[in-house]
Image 1 (tube, rainbow, N blue to C red):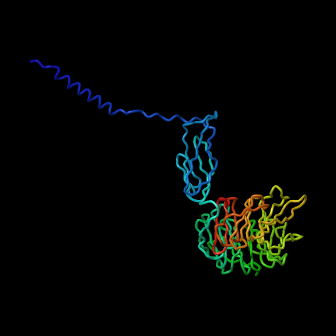
Image 2 (image 1 turned 90 degrees about the vertical axis):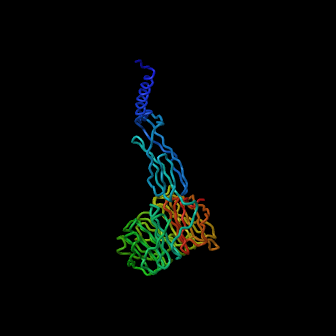
Amino acid sequence: MHVRSSSILPCAALALLTWLAAGCANQPASVPTAPAPLPPLSKVTVSPATDTLVAGQSAVFTATALDTLGAVVGYATFVWTSTNPAAFAVDGHGNVQALAEGSGLVVASAGGFSDSATVAVIVQRGWYMQTSQTSNDLNGVFFLPDRTHGWAVGSAGRIVATTNAGASWSQQVSNSGFNLNAVWFTGPDSGWVVGAAGAVLRTVNGGMTWTQVTSNAGENLLDVWFATRDTGWVVGANGVVLRTFDRGATWQRKTPTSFDLQSVSFAGTRDGWAVGNGGVILGTHDRGISWYIVQPSITAQALNAVWRSATPAPWAVGDGTAWAAGQSGATPRAVATADSLMWELDNAGASNNLLGVCYPSDRIGYAVGYNSGGVGLVLRTDDGGVTWQTQSPNTQFRLKDVFFTDPLNGWAVGRNGTILHTSSGGLP
């Protein structure tokens, strides 16, 4: 019997092809290429070095890695982080998303090296209103250097506080019905408030509770300034000056003038100024143990606020610079002469009545008050008080005090619970 081989070979070939196909199916289609090892680096750089964003905006930062020969490593990968994720987020490609007011660093790291750029997030430019949760007049405001914790005080014992730069404010219980005029904190926990009828309030827990301190005064107290947790001064009606060197346990009283003293400011614990009605300017070089009156008087206009430079300006003679502000645009400033420091009278406009002043630097300062029509007013100087520019406060209410933590971030308070904020130096 003969069998035709042609009928068998196609089956064998088919089996062989099937076996080969199955074997190929079990092999990887391609072998991935391992990333090139990162060479030793000399540095990482991030650009741009700084950026300011409005909440909701985004920006792209780029990172560059250099090897030890200074050549760019184009295939380097970076780990990106934000030091303030509440203010802005960053993804793995350097894309930054602005979320809420604040600032921090965006950091890129690779090969044991890192670099960073500064990111500032603002809500909007210029001055804008914050919701204060009160309709009481607000007379004084203070913020810690962290720019998030602040307090404002006002009529009928009102105290409001914020922990988020004023995005929200809440009321604190002052345990006082007196008008409160000024506030100062020496740290996150320790703070002071002064007001009518000799009222001095103290907190040791950030304002969760306030207690009244015996002040050795019955006059209306108008301003307070502490240089350290232990050392502080209070001024008020009828020329009263109070000082403490033991954290308010005792207060020493002086009346170096009969004029109401509206404001006090110190640079350190030794040198300070106080100003008041009738254009009176008082100075001290011994922690307020003794005071002298600047003579001759440079103005008869009431001086409502004074601010002392924390560090000497280039033109000052050893003990820092000071500025004052008052009625009819009076803006005296302390200037250097050949062998001393003297006060010089400048003016920010006779129709401007100034109630508060703050200098976050020796060149940039702000003054607030109201104009001849009784409308709220904000002024800014960029040359140490020689010239002033009007800014738009976006309120009709009189403004009574202003406080800046740096040249960009500030708050102003005034009538009817008004709280204004800027994180752009008031610039539009």
